[in-house]
Amino acid sequence: MRTTDAQPRQRRSLISVLLAVAVLLSGVGLSYACFVAVSHNELRHAGQVMDRYADQIRVAVADRVARYSETLTDLAWAIGAEGSLTSATFDHMTSGLNATRLTGASAVSFVVAASTDQVPATQAQWRKNGEPSLKLATDSSVSEHAFVIFETVFDDSLDMRGVDVAQNPEAASALTTARQSGALAISPPAQLARDAGVPQLQRQASVLLAAPVYARQGSTFAPKVFQGWITMGVRGDDFLDQTLQTISEGASQVSLSDSGTVIAAVHQGTEFPEMRLRRNLSLTAGQRSWNLTLVPATGLVSPTDRGMGRWVLGVGLALSLMLVALTAVLAGSRNHALTRVDRATAALREDVAARCLVEAQLRDREKELHHMAFHDPLTGLANRLLFYERVRHAVKTHARDDRTFAVLFIDLDGFKRINDEFGHDAGDAVLRMTASRLLTLLREGDTVARFGGDEFAVLVERLHDSTGARITAERVVAQLRKPIAIGKLQVGVTASVGITMERGGADVSDLIRDADAAMYAAKASGKSRYVESGALVSGQPAAATEIPA
Image (tube, rainbow, N blue to C red):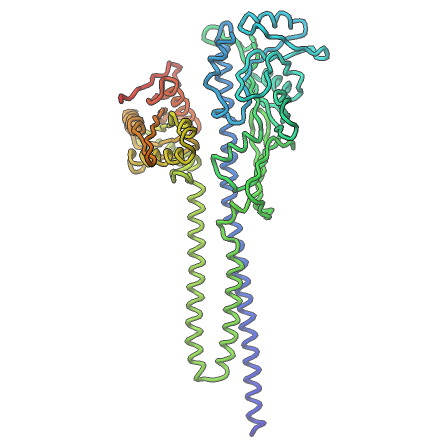
């Protein structure tokens, strides 16, 4: 009997062991599969975030270079329109330029070309035109020169008037390219001659922007009458560091290079060791091909909770062990089996709840990442990328309807003074209050965005004509003129607004650039007012509309 009873017990024991092993192997396999799936999903989300961030940086760098190009080209156009350029005229034309507006720039200079035989006559001419102490320094080894005549310096660097820029090969290449192409050109990276007094370890790689200046005859330019160049040196690290500050900090390590030579490198945060998240992008700037390299930092990928996969694996293994123990208990007693079944059911429900919680957390993280990619962290408004998408959508949809839309570009007047006098916390409070006021002014469906710094943009849709845009601009100017309370302080700013209306054939960049130009016209007309871009496009003087106090 005992032998007979022992055989079933042995069989049951063997079956229980085999069942426990099968449960364990299944649990381990399932847990590992979940670990692989979650880890892959985390990496995919991190890659999407990195792609969006890399595109933001590329757009920001290209946009800043475009702004510099427009500034130099406009200045070259204005100088070409002058019959006889003098030192006083040049100082007046460049009085509105500074290191705040042109981040990383060292100076704006007017450079003329001269052969060795022409040096005495060139020196005498420009001494008569406002530089009585000008002395042109020549190098007998160079037959063609490019002398700095006038300059507006943004820092304490060396005075370069009279220096032959052509002696620097990188600068000479930019001057030659600009003159031959008739368009702005950027030099290969090098160190600026005006930084010779800076300690070697503190010198930055820099580039020189050069725009050709042609004489204007009547209402047209004479391309063959070359007068010189407008140049501007830009220090790479300062340029890139300030550009990234308008987007995010601690998110990636970024380097900007030209043909393998580094122009600038900004290291933010701790490098994240995942080669698949690195990004390389190219862009064209001033007839040069630049390369952007982005290495993710922990500040970028930490929101994706990369430890979630290991957490899921640990929970899965723990649950597998629990199921093994449960199976062993069920095999021992039928009565206890029923109790164990109940416990197993409860454990499975907890497992399902845990997995649902994990999925909910992943969805929440995805929403947070999406919001971070398309909204300004300080004000909660749409950022530049989202605003471009909204305007692009408006161009498509309004083309099918009998409606139009307007883009308003807003810049705060006096904001720098608040930062300087009361600190950046006060400046941030002013920006948040400005965003709040703009939101209360607009209709549902309109878009308010912060472009960075104290620049905002508004998309006003479903308009019959420009009257609605002007009314909105008047309300913006009037509302932002009201004092802002910061604790016990009362501070005040005003707003200059540029308006551009939708027109057939214009793309998003054209509309925003026109609104930006109209905003600068409003500033030039006295600030705290708005200007419509129609007059600028037609070539007529900008008509600024002042809003009564």
